[in-house]
Image 1 (cartoon, one colour):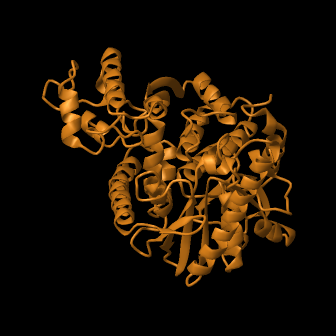
Image 2 (cartoon, rainbow, N blue to C red; image 1 turned 90 degrees about the vertical axis):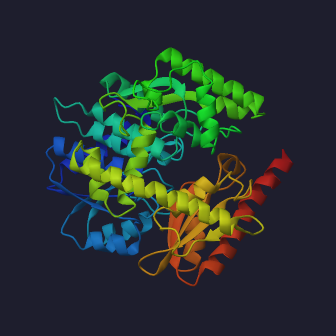
Image 3 (spheres, rainbow, N blue to C red; image 1 turned 90 degrees about the horizontal axis):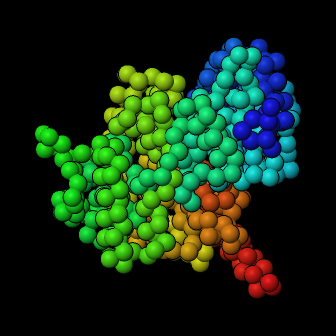
Length: 481
């Protein structure tokens, strides 16, 4: 059986065999939505395979974190959603006999070193930034781990949440290897793929708030305008309020009512001069989780991923993992409280960037939030700032924030257009951070690093130089064509 991603099937089987041979396993995972779903998938698969394990989470897998893992008495360590970019560090401990690594990751691998059980789409000709997430790699491994009589296809639901949380649906739908996982989720009855309004909050937000906060496609007079959104809805031939006078949510509308509202929204966008390419983004492929209750954050994969981001980024990875594992009482209540706080912090962070602006170098732009924005969310804020007027178009943005350990966290965001032109932020973060005594990595379009305090200026200079070489080389190549 080839599984959902045939290119990885043979190596996934070898990784699964190594895990079965272990007396017990330490599962180490990242803390974002992709990392939490990766851990949820891997831990469920290990439990079903009756392999004893313990789970730990790390904000960043650096030298100190790997040393802590090596100090445990586990002979086998399963790394999910990280490990590839730190393979040179991991390999040193493996060579010393401290542990044997099994890696299910999708980030850019460190160069010049390899290990036997390294499951990464980039090693098999697939794009780890757009075709398979960390949760996807963990899902491929979970399918290979299935004991006789066990079907792990239900874990495709978490893999889809992880992929969307990793923004791999930015072109309107999940593609490549991710599409194979979606198909298995549909077959297993845990994922529904359809065409609908692509606005965040369809399950939980009242209609005025749904439209007011729909800023991915900005519609003048409605986006960021509560009164305008209410006026728009009031003029429609749609019952937008229930019998008690409360605003309905998108999921409360009938199919015909949704069609009427969506058509009116598109007409308003056209009349307001919104570009056709942006209007097309209003409607597209959507994914819901069939077994989750309608009208909750868990039903829609985008809302589910945001809920998970609100847990581990505030030091409650245990809460996010419990939700991934099916806890729907105390853990879900706690996650929802964390989500409310998360939304407030993101809003405040974006407002801070708008007020303070960014510094522009030759090839990149940056802002240093210090302790004003939490280091675990500064990358999200940077991504939100792109395209808002707070940042320039066409060059990557770097965001800095102080860590509790007295270091500086760096997050970087680019675009797929920049990547096409030669940008590789994974290389930028890794090379620039190591030049000042730090470390980093990630994807070509988004990456991060940790550097010593006091080295921000030197880091920016080196990162600016590297980005200039990457985009300059691309320009040179284009001129030769």
